[in-house]
Amino acid sequence: TTLPENGFSNLTQLQWLSLTRSGVKWIEKNAFHGLSKLVYLDLTRNHLTSLPPNVFRDIVLRDETVIGLSYNSWTCDCHFKDFTYASLYFYSNATLHKLFKDLVCHSPPELKNMFLWDVPADSFTCAPPSPKAAMSQVEINVIIGSVLGSAVVVTVIVVGAYKHYKKKRNK
Image (cartoon, rainbow, N blue to C red):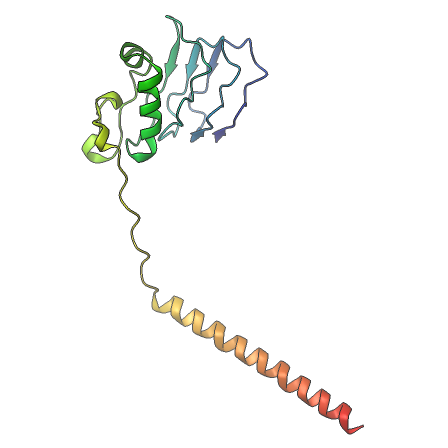
């Protein structure tokens, strides 16, 4: 499930939103646009791994504001880097530790159980993509069979067209 951009924009008076155990995997960058009166947002126990930068910028922060993000599988890698940097710029250190206190890395293994704001900046990295594995013998056989099959079909069509042309020419 994805929370779309402007998905709640017509709910301007909404103050309390619980999306616990909703199967949320991703939140679009302006998903909470228009929710300036929201005081309580619970996104615990979903399938979130990272967040887009400034995703909560439309929520006016008050002393009583709560944003629950615990029990998600936060992946503290290059995909989470932009959210982290934008949050460090946009919010005070005290706000980050109060508001996002339950952002704890689930992976990579060397950062597991580390509080997001304690992760060193140079640790938000992603491994380069692995090269594509060589084709298996089955894949090679399928390709060869397809090429040979196509060649047979083309040959049948050409021979048939030639015979048809020759027959018409002899009339």
